[in-house]
Image 1 (tube, rainbow, N blue to C red):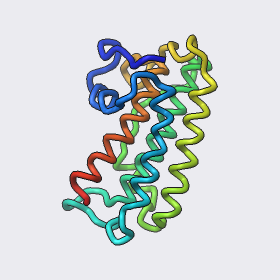
Image 2: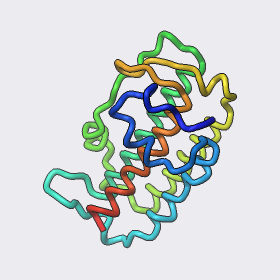
Image 3: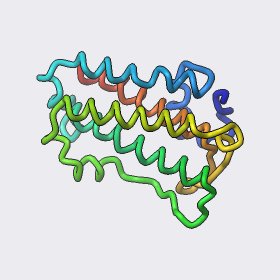
Length: 169
């Protein structure tokens, strides 16, 4: 599926979609695992670094990427399956991070879990045909199609990797 038209996507998601360089979802998902290579190269000693008071460390950022990708995939599945009874509310990333206990997890555990989640996401989106990818649903208070959610998943990861490069390393 082609890149979503930004006019059909809420403005707060534009930045993430724009970060995805590929113009179709399948090609974009093929580059998703690049995050794993990048994260493996970060020295162990940097994983506890916080660039400012109250900010997450790299462990927390990676846990957030994992949690958000799972939530976004759930949203896509609910929409594709035309489930009108399951609400798709927003989520508070800070609350999730606080409850995650990511500080107790190793770099290897987080990277392994992220790789598994990414593979699962790719397989989920590969299972959708064009009609399913164009299915629209309501998330929180906005309408979005499943194809755009795929680009959001990929762009969300890219957004956080960019922040890691710019603020943590």
